[in-house]
Image (cartoon, rainbow over the protein chains, first blue to last red):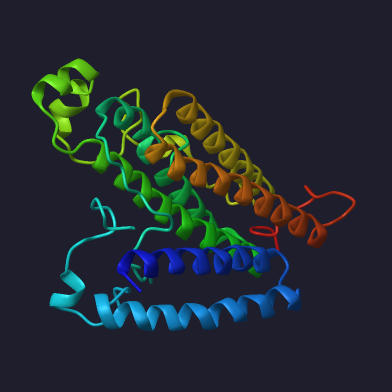
Length: 81
Length: 198
């Protein structure tokens, strides 16, 4: 996958996870929602591995140095898609 | 402790710079109902929240608002690239430019710098959650107004995403308020403040 395709997939999966995360704050005992969250979490982990292998760390507590500093940053034109 | 994720929550890719749009949209960076105020409001209110569901909800929505602050910054940044002095004068962006060049600064569209006076942390959960619900609606209306003034689909798409998030947050805060009142004295919610009175 290209960087743009990987970012789009990450955006989609993480959006679903985040919606469920907020929902579970006010419905902590909804196990259907929790298992759906776990399903998306598996996909997310795979996508993060694939992204980081090609384009460097996604998180500030990941590997430092040249790959972390590599352009583009998210606010740059072409940085987020 | 916070960990930064090197991506936006929703993509921002604006082909055509437009300093007039930037001058309007900056209000959601540092205006009275903007994303900076939203995240600081929720981060600050967390400390006096008595119930775990509400501590979690305020933490999570505050963090998402920081992500929205970054999206608004990206929109303003991309709208103000490669400007000529003529474009700056013609668009009315000159009054912002003189103080900040093309830097992103937390201010309202009116020019009033971001102020903590536009938010509250009252230390009382019914008060704070009611403020939070109102804050989400005020932000939603601001996004509606931006959509009334902006035609470019590259700008409208991320703004529409942010507008929808305000509606989801309003819903979650409403559930949070109901959770809170379920745990309080059902005969008189105001009998005491569980954040302070023991």
